[in-house]
Image (tube, rainbow, N blue to C red; front, top):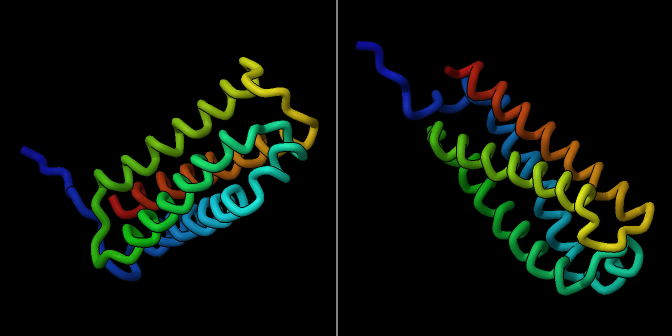
Length: 136
């Protein structure tokens, strides 16, 4: 019977995966801080209500901290990385839904923001998947 490793090899063997997790953390954390600090301004600029941006910002800051914690571990849990990828996929799907359903009266900049973020998150997810496969 074959066994599947539940962790990714430590140190140098997981460079791509750690890089992908850290880049995801940097992008998420930066967006989160901006959303929390200037939600009212961003709301007007992008057509997103501040009441929507505040909790998203808080989530993103916490998410960034969790990603950095995960990336710093001696060994990486495949299940934890899988959960990260699942959340990222949900973010991309929610972004598409936000655009298609017209939940908010987005400005042109708001539409661009949602698209750019979804593409970036999808990119992080692809890198994370590649990192898992490389170590797999």
